Amino acid sequence: MNLRVLEVLVAFGCLALFVMLLVMLPKLVEGIEELSWMQGPLYIIALVVFIAALSTAGYMIDKKVA
Image (cartoon, rainbow, N blue to C red; front, side, top):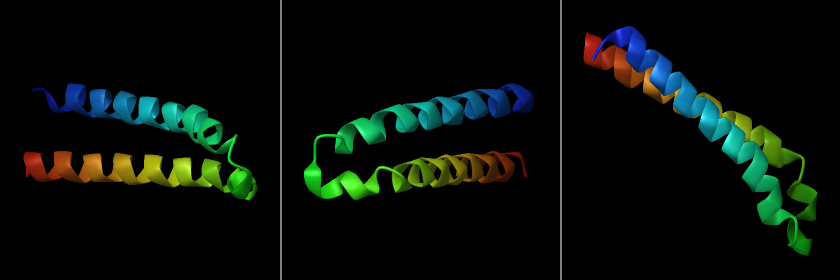
């Protein structure tokens, strides 16, 4: 597969993961009273997961090319 196409597909996949986490994580803790304090940090967790997924995918693509 062309490297450029692979990078674009991985980027869109990670973006979809990020959007899904932004939507789903707050809904998961919405009804749980003990986790109401975690509403704000969930956005940071979603961002960290997005960065980790994108970094790992970039590392794996780079390793495949080399």
